View 1 (tube, rainbow, N blue to C red):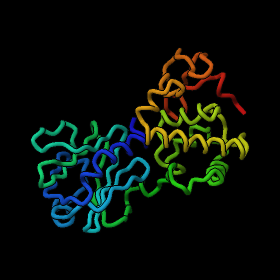
View 2 (cartoon, one colour; view 1 turned 180 degrees about the vertical axis):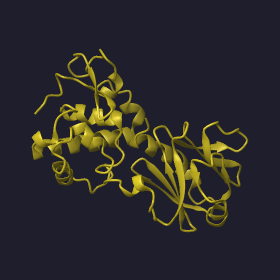
View 3 (cartoon, rainbow, N blue to C red; view 1 turned 90 degrees about the vertical axis):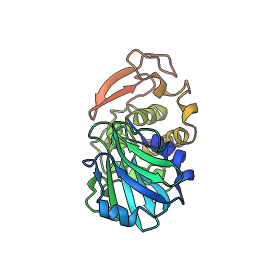
View 4 (cartoon, rainbow, N blue to C red; view 1 turned 90 degrees about the horizontal axis):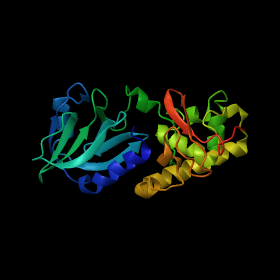
Length: 265
């Protein structure tokens, strides 16, 4: 399942090349997934340069100098990459943005997942999920105090449920929610209403630490023997105490934790 650090890495892999370059042609490979009118694409994308690339939660927004934007809903396993136009597109490719130099920006997503929308400016009206996104977890606005206040408004939620609630905090997925809980030392099924302000601020501290490290040093983080993310299996050994890792299901997601190192408050 794609998560915020994965989206950041995708953007880093193409933004340097694509920014400032003009789109010569838009090719739609999956009309059901791509909500882009052909005439509007010809008017507002083709012949226009990419101005900027932004991330909103796990969405990618490609802004053009025409004042219009393409919004990519990544789904669970969406992917955007630069590729040569001579390489045949994958079966699950949704749309291709071609540059005159012979390369193209491709968006693919398995099955019916993943969507693309063309919007004017930052008018996300009608894109309900994007409209309802909460604060970005890497935003400077998510201070320890703000996190504690947001959490306090959901006392019956579990800690993991809060971290995965995209309308509260946008972009955290299943594996990193477990990692945040592990690094902070709290059970993922801990009820928010039973946690103190100090404990909630501790969660925010590790939330920022985990996501920043995974974003800036993805390979190092995923090779770190001290991260639970590298021991996600029934009977796996906890990287701290070497005790058995337990698995359960929370908010419909497979959840892993160490019952020794992650205590209920």
